[in-house]
Length: 299
Image (cartoon, rainbow, N blue to C red; front, side, top):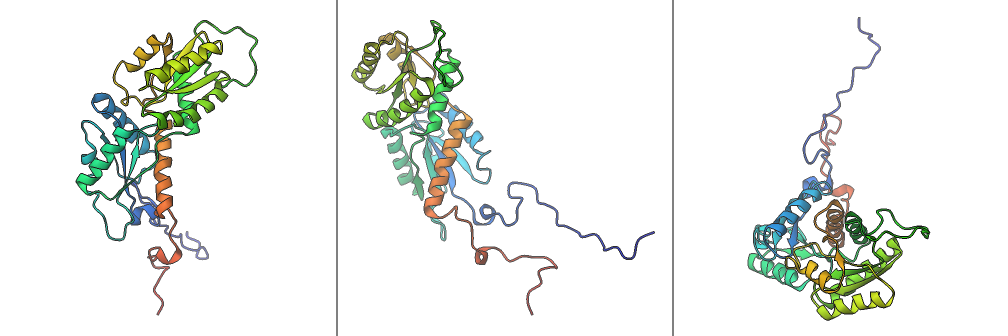
């Protein structure tokens, strides 16, 4: 028997499933610029890295259309920027995030040419570095190779290091002096994590590399390691190993693809959104009018 004093149950609207479950979501009804990843180099390795980082990025920006293109090869940047013509009422149609850790002229030139050829209305973000999280990824690559401890050095160790542990690191950059300058910031952050001497150098400049390893030798470093602070496709295959062997050092793997780099790329994308006001929450007047029996128009 039902209780006549009891109020009828309230029928709540079902939550929509899918990408935009919130009907008042800013991104769902206004839209967001496409995120284009500009991968340096070309070939299978570059395409694989672009695909992996694009997949990882979707966990940070599920509402965004994400594509990638290679600076030299397929899938091309022109394909990734196709359909990004200027749109009425939108400050920009796409945002390009270069997958490089510092200024890299070949990638920048490829982005510029692709945007010009397609007429795409895009804005290019800063490089992924310098950024504190890059030092974290470099630390991980060195630890994976067995050259450093996996945890951060907080106390002075009284235990003699093993023969495999390094006592000096050169962070390799690709892209000239400006890229080496950006790598210098990462080198300082990495040195703070490891408690050893870390120097930057441009891997395109043999003399700069020799000078950096010479400074480590003068400082008493006997087990130097080259840590390439690049994604990977920026350098020709075998170049890192060649530089390490020439300078009597070992080498860790390039940064490659990973969730940390995807997170930095998402942050770069958000920085541009904030700068143009796309990410600014809408005002009350901009929100869609509420619907339902509880929101009848005023008579």
